[in-house]
Image 1: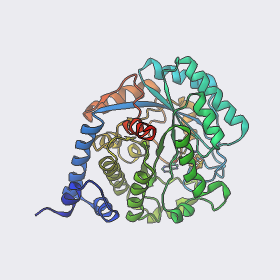
Image 2: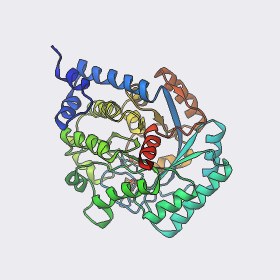
Image 3: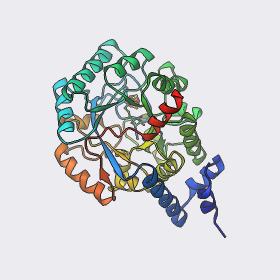
Image 4: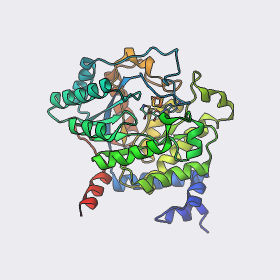
Length: 365
Ligand code: SAH
Ligand code: SF4
């Protein structure tokens, strides 16, 4: 007789109850999920992994998320802003080394100076690469006009994690004020889609007070929103943040890691043609975390190209890996890791999600 996990994996659509069962799976059942996800990945996205060279542009942030090490309330962090020349150097490195794209991430700012600076940077990167480098932004909640300006300046993908799709939990991990409004963040995803971006979102896994039902809800949320890309990873406590007080009620790090891996695998089975990142936070909890994520469905890696002198400043969470590694060391180490995972690297390609292309085709019909 088939066991429940086996029977669920035969289905084409998962219910909330199915997802809870899958997320609770252990041992042999967990392996079945991983195996199925690997098959789906091979069939629908192939074994190519795409690189996005990551620049952590600035740790100056106007928000105060309770989990994040660079929140504005953390006064022990030295604040930085990477210079234009340094960003362009990173862009050149990406180009010369066949990375098809960059991701530029930053603390959230909505002032005019910041917005204009990002616009100019985008134009400079596009010029330098003759339009070859694809650019993903991750700069939080902005107005529709700003999203449009940045899109016109050359960005074409945008990541903004909903962090958790459970509204009540959202307000437990953020201050309850106008700057941290769940609906505003949700609407940002809608605006990005309307503007024409490849849209990515994600959640943290293993947050205090988060349940398996919440995570099942997150997966349904991704499907409902019809996202093009996902970036998920374990929540990792940081001692200079308010959420640190709950460190003793968190699930053990190893379990958090495997739960994150299951989230990646189940999402791959559910949304077969989207891009899914093997995130740095996964590597933080397991030395081979990113390779393991690639094996169970992820197809995107973001090697860090932030100049080393700034990396200590961008500690969103503790024990972040590779904070002393130059880009070239990073490349060698990553290449080896990807080959171990049985994948190839899509050098020089943008590697947009197939889902995006299909969605645009559908919208135009
Ligand atoms: N300011 C932007 C982008 C930078 S933060 C934004 O918030 O959208 C990027 C991501 O880091 C966040 O979305 C969050 O999911 C993640 N992050 C922050 N603190 C974290 C922590 N303690 N553990 C794991 N991930 C964390
Ligand atoms: Fe700022 Fe993003 Fe950290 Fe929130 S998660 S404090 S918006 S950098």
